[in-house]
Length: 476
RNA sequence: GCCCUCAUCGUCUAGGGGACCAGGACGUAGCCCUUUCAAGGCUAAGACCGGAGUUCGAAUCUCCGUGAGGGCACCA
Image 1 (cartoon, chains in turn cyan, brown):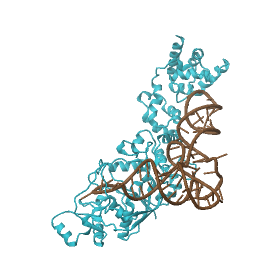
Image 2 (cartoon, rainbow, N blue to C red):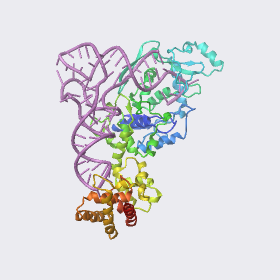
Image 3 (cartoon, rainbow, N blue to C red):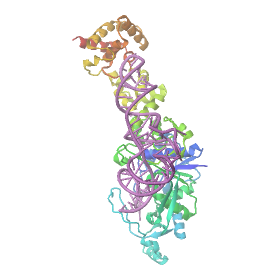
Image 4 (tube, chains in turn yellow, blue):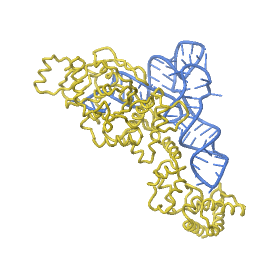
């Protein structure tokens, strides 16, 4: 039985990298009918943001990645919040000290801060506390110094670690530092809690970013020290920006919920992110979550970093929008219509713009002309392709105005038939007739529909008003 | 500085020794369709980082460069 987990730390909204990690973990499990677990890694008391937990739930729900076990779901392997598992880590830390695979360290902190980019690095050196005699340890304890517990890495030799997608990687042990397992505040470090919990929660496959690769051999050593069978690890290539730098919240790059606010559909974001570092081996590009569950194979995960392209996401979002039922699209579009449009048949408007919407946030600008005719230049009436000129436009509008005024049925088809008939009778191209009407009615070069479609939506009064205005401008 | 990973069109990628004068998608350009613009259809330009090997044969294997990214915290 496959068991995977998504293990975010509650430090902010769900990020793109997080989303993909969660997605792949979900897919690996669900492709095989396995279990997907949510675990909260809140072992850093200073950076912990309790409200971020809600963001994680929201993000997961938005993406449709429903977990089977977790803090708000329960399960047989809880608690699923690391700060509630402190005694477990203490006990396991003790075990390693007793077996000689870890030791107490009484040294002062050498913490690195986030803005400490230019810190000078020296070679890995062994900690002086590594070889403290039991008496010396007792002595320190009696002085009231609170120690940390460090992992004892072998002096020499090398550790080979096998990755599901990167293959076998070997590290020299003298390059691995005696990392801290348990901090002096009694909390475990991420690296320690991770190993202990993954084992205790019977995780079979771990998906995580390549930025964690260098801690992998230390994990191997830890599993070995405990005598445990390690899970399979899959290290994902990083997602970077178009300029090659890291996609990060610190640089102000959008997170999952930001993208939704920017007008992207969660299903499109998920689809796009799935293909960033993985491919199905076929030409298919449009996937919903349930399709991914069927075809996902982690063997096809890539090794090199991928750049996040808004161009492609825009296209994919457009594809997902077109795939929506008219009703579903209308429901999504509704909030984007300005108040001033409420008197129009918005379902008709939605039907018109669905094919040409890439992002929901474009909608207000796309439909603004319906509420208010924009100021436009008369040269808009000139179109080489439609054989339309200022003079032909004036004539068409003058001739069709009475026809429009006499229309009894004001519908797209009726209007179209009427105008088409006029075009034929007067020996003109349909385009030559439609062009000035569409222009008069919209004041725009590009509109989300043809002349008669717009006329239908605007209604007879407003259409006639706009046509008369155009005509008077052309006549003067 | 030390360690690790990676390297095919601008971007996402297919490719696992001959099927490759390298395929698809986004973007770009052009054409068609058309009541505009889209959408859709068709077409075009566009890449194997460099150098040595191995081999009858290398985008594919090896090594060396170079470039990019990641890590080296009582952060995850």
